[in-house]
Image (cartoon, rainbow, N blue to C red; front, top):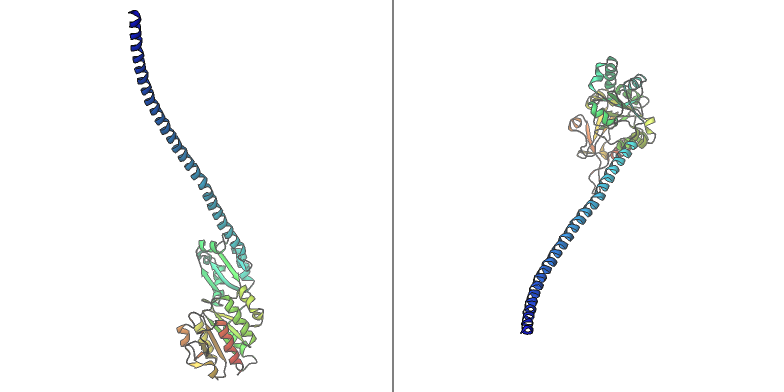
Length: 331
């Protein structure tokens, strides 16, 4: 009996043990599954964090070259600006009160003067500038900041000037010199030609065809700068130039002295080849885009056109001046 009971007990225990062991295994398996899920999720979260970190790190890495390129771009602009400043030629510029006043007293040829309103409070500057303006020198009143821009931050003290490459004479002197030993002199007047290359080319053609002088208005015209002298190729040294305050008044004065006023215009009713007048005359050349101004056209005795055969409707101002001077001087 004892043995049977033991066996039965042991069987129960074995069954219960097995049941318990199976139950424990199921719990353990569930726990293990949960643990595996947790590990997987944690692994995924860890990977996501690593990815986000890598993304943020990579984004930071990407930003560095952008910042670097921006720096390089700004440095490049700065270098370009400095290079532009270095290329600007200030050889014919003078600024500063003492330097400018000495240049005014030395009677050097002056193309243009920039000054602030404070300069006119000085008596010596006021008298000198007033006299120069009457001689045709362009005097422009500007602000202090504008003058600093023109001189690129130099210590200008409120005044700066640009020297001319050649001296100009008064209109009266030009008329007297043009009539000296010449019965029918030809003068050339420029109306609104602001390109110094065109002015230089016109000066060269005028001297080559025996023109006695050139009249340039104070405003709306290029002055006698270094570019004009370079393009003129030495012709400016052999040709008299008068710079007048008002071109229309100068034309009226020339008419009183016996000069015919002839304007070159694409709308001119008379062809240049049919113009046969022989007298002292002034030939007016206008700008390429606008031509001769309407007020100046009213001052003209004749409006001449250059006959064109091709499809091109107009000529360069310097070319038109050369053709007209060749025809008028070869009559």
